[in-house]
Image 1: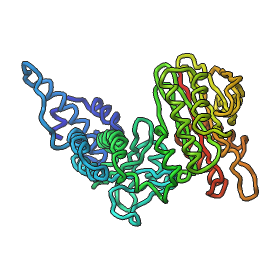
Image 2: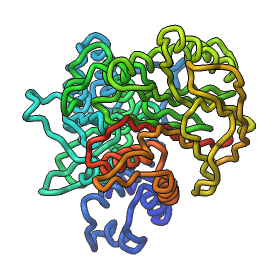
Image 3: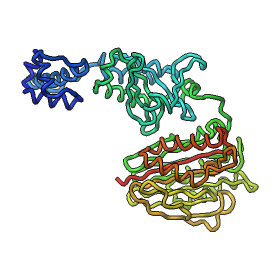
Image 4: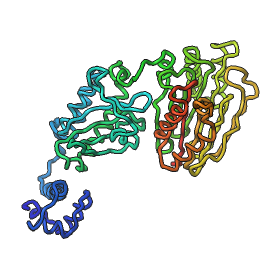
Length: 467
């Protein structure tokens, strides 16, 4: 109690600070504890001690002798900054597969043991990285584990099952969910330490950026994510895709392709800026490598025109040209391309023989966007028109390929437009973000067809939030 005696705080002031940190004891219980008449659980004692120590730090800083200029501290050996420095300095020259061990070193600077779990391509399980041997890799189901809950909700989750206290911390790159950190602590009381949670979030955030940048340099981080071999066409298309999720203060986008290991003709794309958001979804005719090559060419033609600053009208013409020249003989690609003005919400779009996008407002489908219709890309660019729609803040757009609605169960029943609309309505009503909605939707479509799709099934969701 000597620290409290020097803290220059009344009982009420101390209790307010303690309560703000998450303390649960009332004022009388704290008074009795300080008087030696009662006890507090260890975690509540630590929160009370933290409140006193914060006050002592304030008093110490007030009485420090000032320097003529600010002196910078040297390299830290412990704490969150040491963890950041450890990871950043080593990751720049290490091979990709060493990254999980480097994260473990950074965790030790925080006084915890850390393991990295990466999401698999189907987003159904989390795979432990850094564990030798594919057969021995630990896989955690996204739908039924605490690790999966952290991934689904993007929130820190704690567990103390079997006397093994640990935190599960989501790993994201911007808005793209990559996996979770498993943080093991010695004492269950540490699970409720707000500073430790913050420090683990910082480490996970840094890891997300590092992971996204280094895993393209080798196969050591990619190989564990694969549950089975990937077809060459799927390999080609996955390498062309942007991150599955992206966000700004005004827009959130999330996309998915299925079947993950054997896609051929489907793809999506987008581009975010302060002024406009571009979005597109494509479905090339056929299957296998030929469809994959056509899709890759379509993406290249679309991106070339878009990055030149050309309009949606001209982007459609550029796609027509590349498909017709490279794949003559009635080869074609269906798709939707569009651009949203961020300030006004005006959407301009072209639909080339593709299922019409859905507009969702106030949690329900209000219309199909039937404008801007024309024949598929690569067949005939005459008669090209551009559709328009005014979005309202909070609106969702759903772009999808026919593999979603035409997935059939064992009895021949289609997944269908109505089931799709009902699924999206329930997801939005439940407050699910686009990334989790997309994950659950593609899983539902796959389950509807018994786990084996006869056609690629892809979706791109976008939500506009007026800045």
